[in-house]
Image 1 (spheres, one colour):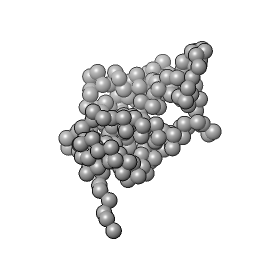
Image 2 (tube, helix red, strand yellow):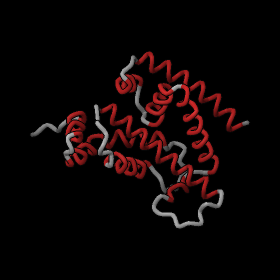
Image 3 (cartoon, one colour):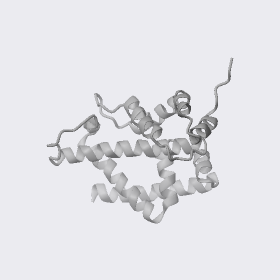
Image 4 (cartoon, helix red, strand yellow):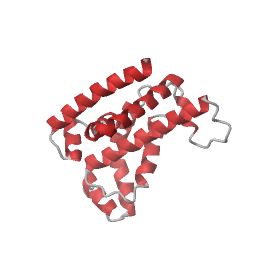
Length: 191
């Protein structure tokens, strides 16, 4: 019985424009992508249209379309997947807010999945994104750690490998960024 290639080997093949590598990669990493998506949709309202499977599939399409990315390893792949999931969730929150403000006059396509968010949840997601962008302006390392940890579900060691730093530095960046974000969100949502 042939041994299946590992994630890093498949990513190397993707870098060489091997179109079959992504098809072989997805079954190997699908469960991990589902775990990531599920952890990000904890706040999902029941009966919503964007569920774990839908988020994984949307992320897959974004990842499959990443022709110019030079995939380094498994951790790099999941870091990019985390960014893709963040963007999908954020886009849905923005659409929910636009719809709430009367911006739904135009015909919407399949992306009408914003209905899964409550008004409060979409406001919280947008406030988090705004706070993340502010954090990025003065602490890009902290910003990246938050993205990889929160949206990607990566642990300290995995983030350290992606960012080429010690896991102690990652942990310190996580704690500092989390403290700053908590204060910023408390101010913006309560203030």
